[in-house]
Image (cartoon, rainbow, N blue to C red; front, side, top):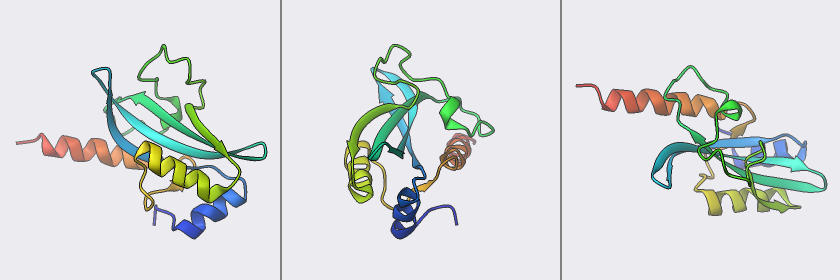
Amino acid sequence: MRYLTRPFVLGALGRRKEVEQFVGPVTLAGVRGIRWVSVWPWQDGYNVSVHDLQDLDDEHYRDLSVFPPLDPEDKGDTGYGRVIGHVHDPAEALELAERDTGASPDRWVNHGVAGEDYAGFVLARRAQHQP
C-alpha cells in the first residue's frame, strides 16, 4: 500500500518526517513539465513546497528531488522547491498543499516515494500513445 491514510500522514508529520505527492503534469509559460509537492518539518512548524520540474520522460528516474527545475531562473526555488507557506499545525499544512497545488487528500506518500507515481505516469502516457 503506497498511499498513506490521513492519520498516517499526520502521524508521520508529528514524528517530524516529510510527506510528498506527485501531482502530475503542469505547463508554465508554454513549457510542459511535472509538479510534486512536499510538506516538511521546519523549525516550529511545517513548510509546504511546490516543485515544478522538467519532465525527463524516463520511468527509471524516480528521485524527483534531483530533476532540474522547469524554470531555471525561478529565484523562489532554493532547492527545496518554492515554499508557499509555513504553518504550525500539520493538518493545516496538508490543507494548504491540497488547496493551493492540486494535491489529493488520498495520495500522500512518505518522503522518497512520489517518484513511483511519476514512473507510473510515464508508463501510462507511453501506453496511451502506442497504436
